[in-house]
Amino acid sequence: MKTPAALEVKGLSIKFGDFTAVDNVSFTVNRGEIFGFLGANGAGKTTTIRMLCGLLVPTSGSALVGGLGFEDGGRGIKKIVGYMSQKFTLYNDLTVGENLDFAAGLRKLEPAYAKKRRRELFELIAFDKPLTSMVASLPGGIKQELALAAAMLHDPEIVFLDEPTSGVAPASRARFWSLIRRITALGKTVIVTTHYMDEAEQCGRIALMRTGKLIALGSPEELKKSAFPGPMAELDFKGEDASSFISGLEKARGLLELSPQGMRWHAAFSDRPAMDAALSALPSSSSHALIKPSLEDVFIRLVEGAER
Image (tube, rainbow, N blue to C red; front, side, top):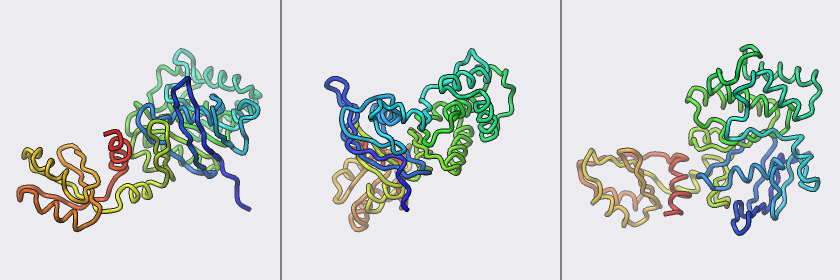
């Protein structure tokens, strides 16, 4: 028997006055999946998540979250989801224990159950500091792990993480993503938004959003193949003024995308003959190498390219 999806979203939209924040979005998330939202600021990622958490009522469309809809105003959904917002959600002027007690109180958890869950979650995140520690005194990465623990105190089926590693050191980001994988290994479903392309690579599938619309959906490899069906080259002009060569490349037959990458350029073409013809016109002092596209290349082409 096929396991029901964790999320089934069909034509979901929400308007604030005349402004459409999320526009006719449809997708499905499987149970136990790490599903990512990728997009620029204002793309509609956070608004979509808030609807799916039962915090906002959609203007139109439908969604089943763990098999539950919005008929009761989202009250049932709130019981089976955990939500960690992009801003730090614990109180700096309270201790670790006071923060988690407060979170348990909001969820109306029995004290014995809340204490049991706290022990389980401390073991999950390897937290070994005293409960009397002030949250303000903890490093940023540990604060985020505690915020995750608070969001999971009621043992939700589905966990929404909105920019969970924003402003966190790279080592702490890697540790947090290790926790995400451990959470899904426990049978949880994780939906995460991120601006970091290396993090997006770790998602099973990604929904790419722009101006409230879902413009691409698939695994990282599927998105790369769809955005770049032909070859890509990295160009190095060896410190020469590249402006005249770039203006010529922009007119080349079969060019799909041309974008700066630090001191170098990435050029994607529809096919190998088109690429060979274009690159043969470059100065002999320059060099190029065939490369595989990254998610950053996908983002530049589908989001920034469309805006250009």
